[in-house]
Length: 291
Image 1: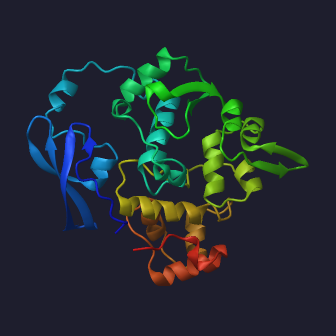
Image 2: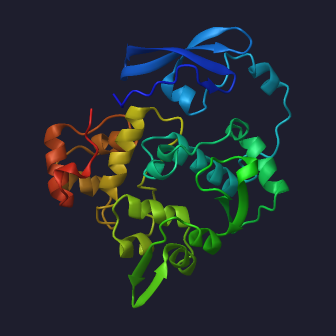
Image 3: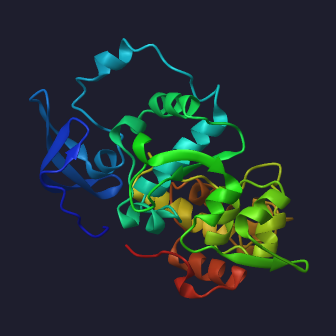
């Protein structure tokens, strides 16, 4: 179980957390909070759903959603939707590789922007264009309309607290410049490096016909997110030219086990983990194996 954080008295949307309880479920021990909604209804909500913004009322707001005419949807604005999910993941998901720089520092997402349509409309009304990135005006404050704007990738990189430079092929540039040079998404390049991928490989990595690196979604529970996170660390260290089937064969494990690990459904046992660590030649503490 992760370290306990006391949310007693805190507000999450229309819910106020009152008391805490640990329950044994099919996924293991899960934290729940007993909450009171603004309408007076009281209910138990899992800590994950509460703190990640998945549950913001007892259900009394569902009628409002049913009567709400949708604003532009994610299929009409795929890049904006990707920016929105990335913002939520690094602020609300402790298993994200970037959580320590965001949620871990107290940076969160305002209640209004927990709904994609609200974020989408704000973006369109405030100068969003393809090629611009979301920037917080005050890096110590959270994501909200009053603290955000749209700027170029290069300008955002210059505003980073710790600007990092990399040398490759005789040239030295900051990360955003490399992303622009190779026509890469800055966030993708950053995440590859955060997973431990060598810079040259991160810069020149080509996707296989199937997408090998799983995405950690905000709605994933802690067990699934942790499994996916460890798989991410594993797969970026493997030979790009080998299929997952061949990798599994070389390690000596079933491909189905590798697939379940990739999808977050299970984690390799201790015997398999020893083979995996030896196969990719990393230290035993490379993976997050805390219970």
